[in-house]
Image (cartoon, rainbow, N blue to C red; front, top):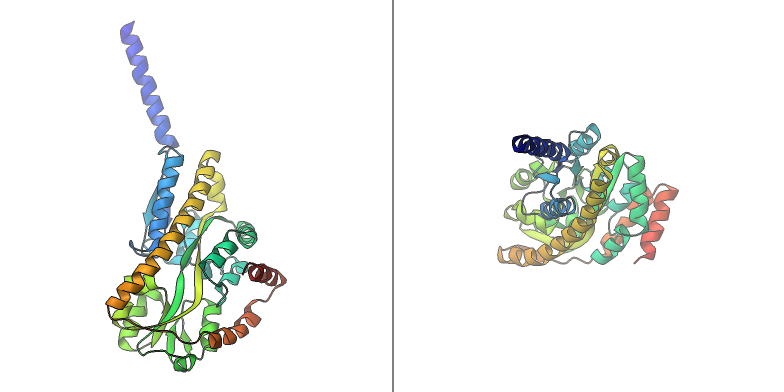
Length: 323
């Protein structure tokens, strides 16, 4: 009798163990930055919260540095089901959700707090709906940094950009902005930028403090003009299909993690910016502060070109009201 009970207990334990294993979920998350940058820190927080909220039944594996492809390839991977979570720069996701291009406009936000009000309010909710219509589930808005202009020669005024070749992201509004600033915008691949600066293929680039330091661009472009011409948004997303395939309690955990990690990632970015600026000064980077108004004035042509639907104009009106 005792032997039968013992065998039954072992069998039950085996079934329970198999059930737990079967119920466990591993989510794969990819991003383009390196291990020291805020995307990584944000996703580490995301993984921590997911595990906490699911009692360890769901884990998140993080793949930095474009290990799973570039940002566009990772977005396509979400739709194909080969990747669960990605944090692409907003401008890349606009190829799939055109309404998001509102975030690519120059001088859209007064400061970080203005940006956060926009992302966490009506505009963010409406854009989340647009993403869902295009088969994406928004988990949170990350920050991708206040952007400046780094060059091989100092930029003290907007006229100093005339005819300079400046690398931009492959985002139409960014290309248009730098052409309006008087530069020759060059949407070069990010992986080629250091060599292009070193060899003189380009004269400069737009960059945030974080990637400027992490990629050591200051070695070949030691001047930084603080113009804060845009603050990039990054979208923490899954495919809608993958999200709906998760159990309801896991969906809830993922949404909680998205919100908490977004708040944390933004905090990390702001703190890193303040610290890195001092480190760049110590490394010999020369900072300049060109007058901003001429940049703003020339940016109006970009708005005329890219605020091209009633929906985008409505979003812009709400953003203006939140200043």
